[in-house]
Length: 516
Image (cartoon, rainbow, N blue to C red; front, top):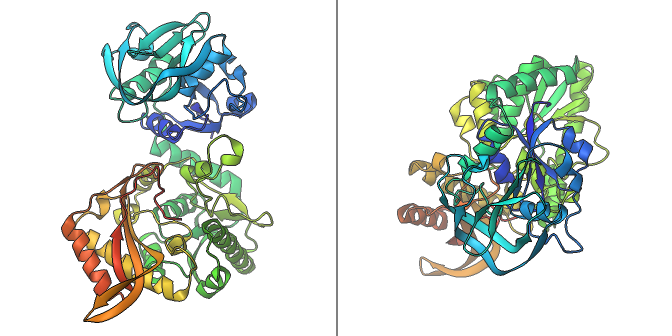
């Protein structure tokens, strides 16, 4: 899409995606590019402003991210955040050094230049979130101090060059005036417009998809979740009956999901649907495999192989299929893209990290630029039912990444039963829509137990429940003790083969939402 955007250059910060979200919350489109992006790639995004993210490196290190300093000379407004401030300082003639007193966590910042447009209508003293070990010792020529802490530079600016920077993180909720600061940059400095809306997205995506597909036919990889369902409805709106949705039982779905999803998609969305039971095929490929990345790529490759087979069959009825629709989201792309920049690959996603080079179908990914909450907004704009839009996220590789170790039919059956209890009890407690994800994990650990005076030696099940905005960061949910008690009691008593239940209280970071 060619609407005006804010380009965020990623220097490896764990908060980069949060910057993008905060900007989009103001109905301004943002796009994340690796800091190594070429200037022509930056210009191609039709930017009205540029944000330089934080990052874990030091600008004076030999292995500092090799970003092009020319980005500071495009004449566009630039906002440097944390490492971004140091990058600006270092490359425009200032000096950065390792700080004598590092600042991590909460800090108080004094606004020195209250007339600065970046701090318009912001109090003279603000509470912020710091995360840095370096500091700007000498400012570049033409820059002046705009904010400070008790021990370090906290903000600098050169309005003549249209460059502003802060040492703290305005994108995190700990910085109380962070949203106001970002709004000042977007609207007071960049002159951005609030035109990134669901209606605009639907109209432009439908038009683009219609032009791309022409009179061709497409198949859509449907899981029954929010992402693929919204993607299918969008493409169906563009090309109608020339879209055939394919729902595959990969052998690692949740309990009764193969039947339930078919009913939802046909009855509630009116989509043309083909259901394929390929469970034996997938489980045979997964036999003996324990490495999480191998599981993901095996499932991704097998998905495409199944769709390729279905495309040939459907082609005989339609005269040809050239396109494959997938519900890929922006976090999927970002988490799988370490080859393009300094950010670490957390895990590959089956729809962006496991595609075989020999795939014969061309891709349509209408949601590739969206975060999860934006997808739900689009779904509501399309008039989709809430019970589909409010489904919690479910990973593309399914229960395979919630079964640690080898995936076998017996282990799948155990986890299906345990997971069904977790979800049903959380729904009964009225908590389902308040939680980002809640599920069970089967651990490759057996322990001794006692039931009915009999010794047992069975598996351990972990319960996971997290709050999140977009899946990029997450906090564990303090489920009520009575809910945990009921879940534990039911699993141990109803699922033969599990005799111990534990609760995962790890946030992301340092953990991930899924265990694999």
